Amino acid sequence: MKQKPLSVRPTLLGHAVPYAFLAMYGDAAGRTLWLYVPLLVCPALLCVLAVKVRLLFLLPAGAVLSFLSSDLFLTHLRTELWSWYFKPFSPLGFLVLLSAAVLLGQAAQACLLKARSKRRSGDAL
Image (tube, rainbow, N blue to C red; front, side, top):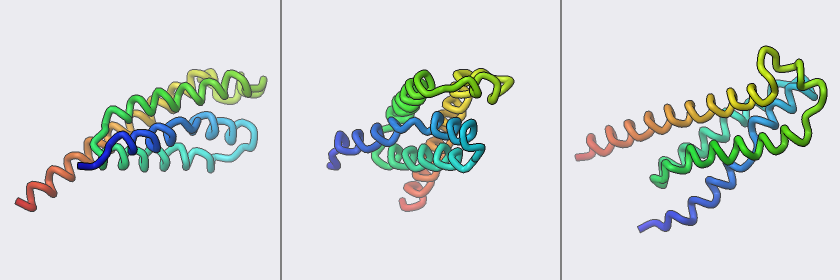
């Protein structure tokens, strides 16, 4: 039997990175959209890991952890520019929107991965 607690740490540590804040910071400060790519790719890879080790509770827990770390950075590093840059959203509103979109994307991806693994295990029988 695989030891699942060892897979919990890397997955939660991967979610602890403030992906949404980094993307917003790159957008507002550097006018680059390239930092939205890790916001899409890294949670997708973490979702694959969580499905593979069958610890799906890590997805919402990780999304909350990523949101909280992003909110912490947003609270302390936001400038006056951020007040109008993400209109029609406030910076916190845009952070909530990004975090919710990532969580919904992870949920959809987890459902697809689980269905595919069930289909493959059914084909093997």
